[in-house]
Image 1 (cartoon, rainbow, N blue to C red):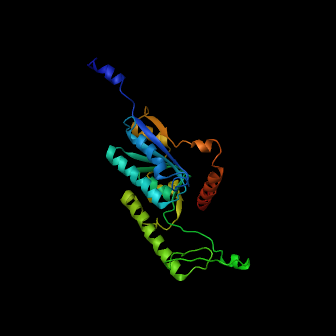
Image 2 (tube, rainbow, N blue to C red):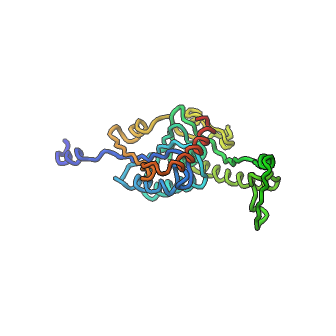
Image 3 (cartoon, rainbow, N blue to C red):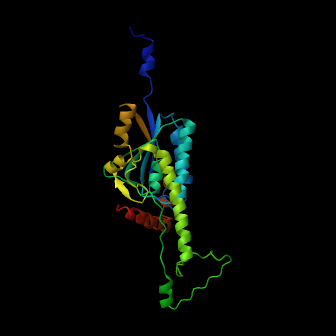
Length: 269
């Protein structure tokens, strides 16, 4: 026979809670983009520490951006997860590409939509060469430096083999840091049959097959499977700055929007 004194405790038992953090947009230093470590840090702190959550979910929709900011955000997620002993689940919307995937792989598992884009594990440097254009205009470029490599990759002078070799070396080092992070987080789940680190990206089902993700599914249904039908969620997202509300940073927003559009265009979104 059930102890009647146990009934009130059971009736008032709290439903499991999962805090969700929205990580959306281009990754760049604060003031230049949508996602930065400094900007997202307060939201992550609240998500891991508010209401004693059973888990934290990361709702990710990002084409990538700064590798350093991606690494800082990923490291913060792991640090908070270990300090609070809280599981972390990532849910990919349109994309977790490049730096977006760096952040997603900081989670313990990754779920995505069949049409989500995941991967793009690579590093890119892009620019323009304008030296011929200014020559046609009769413009003389005058640059004075202390340090013979100080003006390397100047778009107003021709590239040199030395500059290209140095850039390739830097990109290779950065790429290896990215690869090491993904391997450390995903481990044996990664397929050995495909080169996952050549910059390609894949749709959801193929990403699951290759070990870049763990399953297909959206946040609420997956969380119900993991924590029961009564699971409660609370969403933490960035607030718009006061100046933006009054239209006082239109030029900054326009510049960021163009840069972000270029990142999305690389993955066909």
